Length: 308
Length: 308
Image (cartoon, rainbow over all chains, first blue to last red; front, side, top):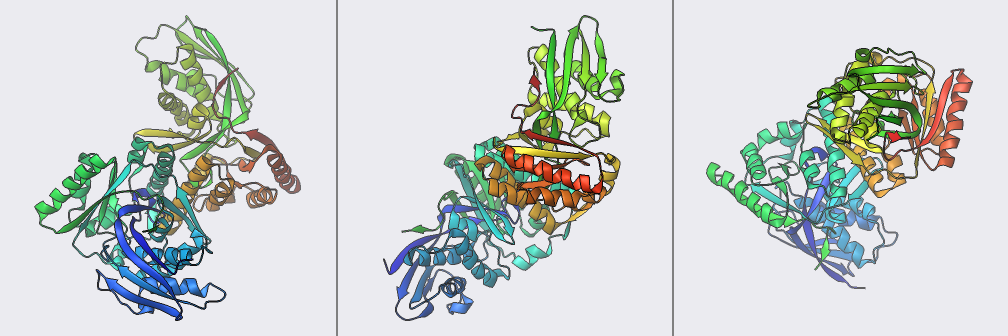
């Protein structure tokens, strides 16, 4: 068995439109690289951290916390873990920066140990990293990062995560305006109560979206990519959201929405050519408003964290 | 082209657990029979009506109203329609009695005319019958009666109905306690507002159920067959609901809930043998309470209204 593994830890989109809090997807070309080593010296250490200004103390680092949760679940641990992290995903961008580090760590350690844990167990360890990052042990980013493709977090109690068939023609465009939206703020605008009428529309769209993914019915996917409930209030926190969304749909996207709790905005398109046109249309909006941005165009990643 | 057609108009289950207001399914062995004739004399007439005490005046009969809506949509009508209805489905039972008559009528007329209308158009005509029956032009029973299997009414504006893959092993058990629950009452107990937390659980379950249907994952179907929102309040109107539901699940059902707006209670099982055991368990509850009932065990009907 190897003692060192290099992996690609992908970015992810959570809260895919109508699938608020349940539906996420995995990107293919956006992500961090990591090296995870099994060492004789016990304990978990973050040995390198480039690209972002994040804490290197094990218990303050999401990768460190996820690794510790994993080692605690093993009956006998006579080894240690070293983690090198090369961040390409910006923290706070809304495309699962912390989830990539947690998910990458647990998948890599699992491989080093001969894969004793199931994907569901790995998700639970990685969720401890998410708890450190945001205060909530949510699974909507770590699940697609670990399982790939579209994932549905059906339930938390008990945790139940389902892989959803992911049509290979789908391509994501994600624009990250360089503004800060605090997770606390995007939570604060959520209403505790929603109208039954809107909730019914939302679960009708969830049903349509899941059906469209299985049957690869891109029109149905497009008709279903709406969020009646959260987007209308959260969008207010993201300058230019409506223009970016409208521009992406005019450019041919199947749908567009807030990635995670923002500020990134995603669009899904059929085929790379359209996804690139959508990127240009999104960029034009922020060029006009004068907001700096990063832009990503990526196919969906069907397997999640990859060995490189 | 024939001038007369005999059809079987199936019963249906709407509000399938988490799929409140959007998800319905079609039964195979429970339903009415109808004869629809094209006549030289113009106009729509109900020429026979057996089995239930329902109005025979065309504009007061759901089949008559659906037929008229259909004929109005044709450019030139130089013929009339006669409808014989033999009701086996009791009115007010919660398994789509009115929908069967409306759906049967429009499918039969469409066949007599050489099928000029799409299923979506037929649903829209049949919805006029539902409007007469309950005051609301809802599609959740007429859609599965016309299209068969599981159907999802994703949206009303515009109307968008999706056929969902229906595993052939699923068998429904439906018990109809002989009590009256008025549609008005079951609407009155609905709350206008629901908690976001429960709504998220509900659409997580809708996602899980639709995924389970496509992948024929019976465990996932079972885990997803929950209604967090409507069942808890509506169940109060149905004596013995909790006992019937619990007994059906103990007997092996995948899940159980209120059929339509009740009072019928349905269960879904994998295989006929289990569905029959579930029937016995449900019957025992109402025997003990001393409530009369009808009971039905039926495979799901993948095609809807059938020519006989």
